[in-house]
Image 1 (cartoon, rainbow, N blue to C red):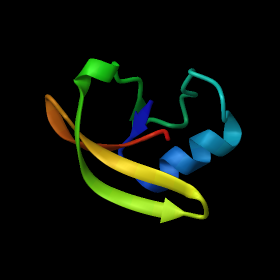
Image 2: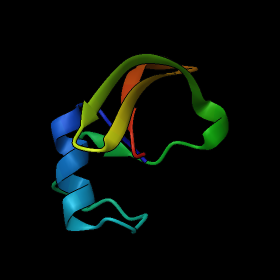
Image 3: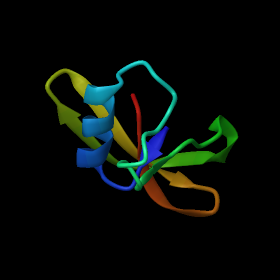
Length: 66
């Protein structure tokens, strides 16, 4: 699961921390197959959780659920 921005990813994780479904209000998020995710472009540490914005094979980086 990945989102266009880190704030949206964190909101999604707070609402459904273990789930794989993406509610409609999280339009900037989508499921990405593991083989579609590339290298780390950006990193952020919030509390004890590391977050990574990873490049996609067919587009810009997306924030990936840790």
